Amino acid sequence: MYLQYWELNRYPFENVPDPNFMFYSTEHKEALVRMTYVIKRMKGAALITGEVGSGKTTLSRVLIQNLPEKEFDIGLITNPSLKPIDFLKEALLELGLETNSDSKTQILNIFNQKLMENMGQGKNTILIVDEAQIIPLETFEEIRLLLNFQLNDRFLLTVLLVGQPELADTIRKLKQLDQRIAIRYHINPLNAEETREYINFRLEKAGKREPIFNPEAIESIFHYSEGIPRKINNICDLSLLLGFTLKAREIDKSIVEKVVEDSL
Image (cartoon, rainbow, N blue to C red; front, side):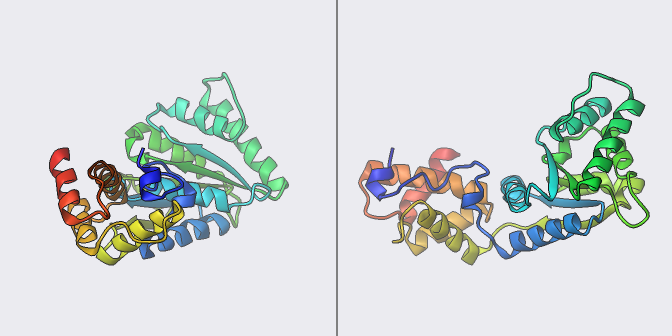
């Protein structure tokens, strides 16, 4: 709607996990390094947490994009609010297998065969569970069982649990699973300078090299968003829309504050 007015090729502040718009703050770089390490070293499990809208999902999509298909067989579960058997069947489905059996023993046997087959082909098997904080308590036991598939020197399956901060508290109470978490990392919000870089990065990705938001506007966006990328996106998108409506030459603090006021 406002693309032509602001001389943009695409909408810069969409809240979708598009790897092309991934902004690598220091925190995101560190999280990606740790996730990659646990996968390539076959360490078993990793736990990545962050507040709602901190960029965890986008980061997991970047990770998938970076892993060569010939070396990694990756399953992605995006809605893990499943009963134990249903979770195992969904994990199998995401790895390209399907079964009508409700027998845990049979399902685990199929899983084992798949893992051994991948190993024979020189592939590592990865299971990424997004929004893992909504996993039912009893289903975490199935994840622990999957991590029992291992040889003397390596795990046959790597599990990445990605979720909100409360996920870490839940796992801490599950001692046997907690002991299998090789790496854990919490993604903090962007600071003021990173917020400025984030906004300009996304505008540049959308085709605009000249600034649209003045310094006072960016300072205000940081204040109201608390450095959370999803909140930044919402404020910036609506500010561009309001700026277009007002035929503004730039986005200033008054436009940002009007957007925030109308959103409350």
